[in-house]
Image 1 (cartoon, rainbow, N blue to C red):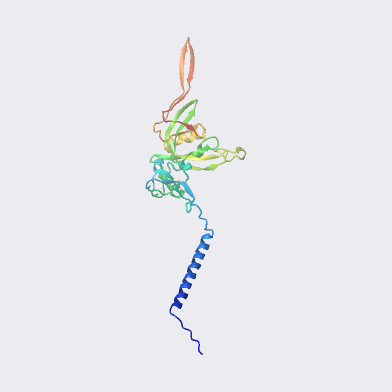
Image 2 (cartoon, rainbow, N blue to C red; image 1 turned 180 degrees about the horizontal axis):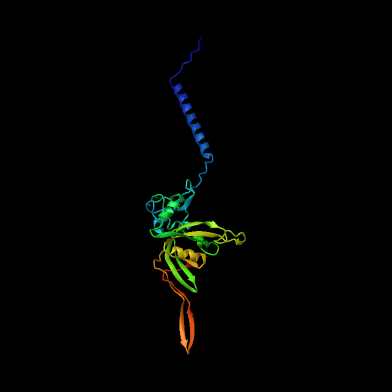
Amino acid sequence: MTLKLHWYPWVPLCIGALCAVAAIITMRVYIAHALQQDLPVVEPIHRQWVVVANQDLAAGNTLQAEALSAREVPALGLAPDTFAPHIASQLFSQRLAHPVQRGQPIQQLHLQYASPASLAAALADGTRAFTIQVNEQDSHAHMIQPGDKVDIVATEFERSFVLASAVEVIATGPLGGRSDGEINNPTAWHGNQYRTLTFAIDKRLVPQLERMQQQHILSFWLRPSVDTEPLYLHTEVQVEWIIGGQLNSEHASHQLIQHPTQQAAWL
């Protein structure tokens, strides 16, 4: 007797359906397991405030407060020579060596620094560069920047007079440990720090300023940038009184006349 198996058409369909159900169940289990795993932590984007140009600036432009603004930008990839808003004043009156587009952070490499060629270019016709040393410890000389203006005052024979008004600082020099006259004297070290300031001076005043600088009778008064008026001084004068055949003299003290917007400061 021979046993014959009869395959019906629906048997393969059942097997295929079972395989499909098994595949769906396996996929659901895999997805559930993947969702239960810890997702990678996404670090927050660190941002930093910097000084940017609020308009397109060309090379040679002088930076002013109205051309700058503060903006928060991603710190990743930010150049290390940018300027934070709290030191934005260091940029005022600086000249650009390269153009800067609107919204672009200002960098050190954009600024124009004094070199032998650019220093000569900063001198107007009829002027000469005049360099002095100022004491860093007892003054605010470390805050002076190219573009600042000062009044040069001389005090001689108990009277003061203005030699030049609104003289522009065109360059500043590095720190040193001794002032003029102390460089060759090893015992003259007092721990003070000195800095050089270079001005654009009328060439006719240079010999007189050289002499007065050696006599240490010059004062340099920083003036605000908004003040355009020249500085005037009432000098000390001698008044003679003749009383009963006697000659008496009195000295009127010199007085600084300040304009409403002017606040003079000693260097």
